[in-house]
Image (cartoon, rainbow, N blue to C red):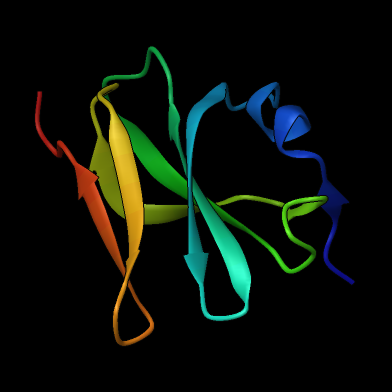
Length: 88
């Protein structure tokens, strides 16, 4: 089964994940996080099916992030809108 953790534990992980942005998606929550102080970092994603009590182990997306802010919004049609800066 998938490993679960509190969101604060994910932020303190060895990958230096920070700035969680959380959005409702279908019947769960999705959090996107970024790697801090890493100009060649990636955006990571984690989800929660218990209203944010616990979160899945995060995994990297193929989206670059040069240590800049991110946000995510749930939009109509069961879609997510991710806003990020892909270049320094």
